Length: 76
Image (cartoon, rainbow, N blue to C red; front, side):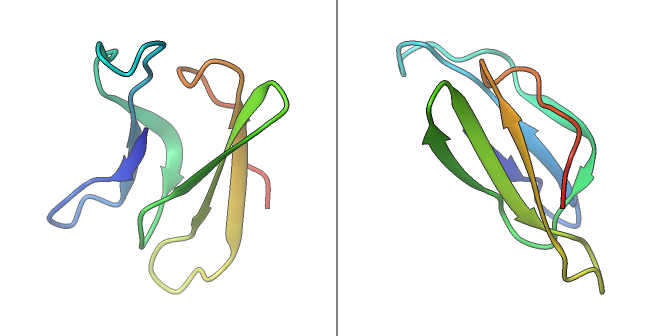
């Protein structure tokens, strides 16, 4: 799962689970932020995440992860 922080926190956080019952500790994904919450999708062997930039940055960025714990550098 991935989400935007609350109360002015524009960082994107994530946690991974293989069962949906037990979750890894929450982690900040370094170097990215969003004005709104991110979106996740699964394609092939990867989880893809897309998000909008912060403040006046209206670009859409994306990244992918094999395990939901470490993410490729953002693309956009």
